[in-house]
Length: 108
Image (cartoon, rainbow, N blue to C red; front, side, top):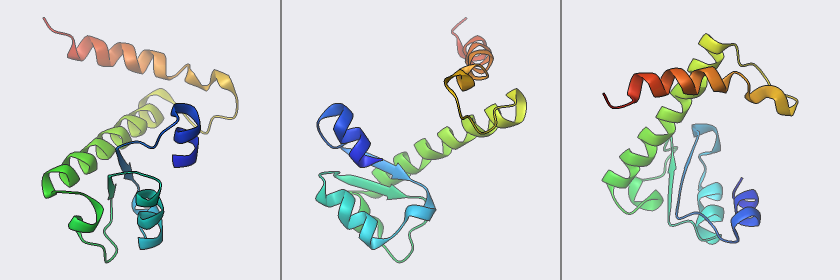
């Protein structure tokens, strides 16, 4: 994922949040070696917060960002029937989801 990001944008992201399945010291070292300053894994797996990010606050923010993304994906799967996408037309369930989200969150 980092290599794809670097190919698209020409540089590493400043921060990254990843699933607990990717949590390992080898992945942490590789991400830091590529230039990512803060890497937050959902599960710590023997790593300390200080090794991953510069502060507990940054760790919480990245962890919560990832949790919010997972909630959106869950809603798309559950309420809008998004399943595994194998072709470009899989974006269709996201349109009604985005519209309903916009109507709920738009300012009065």
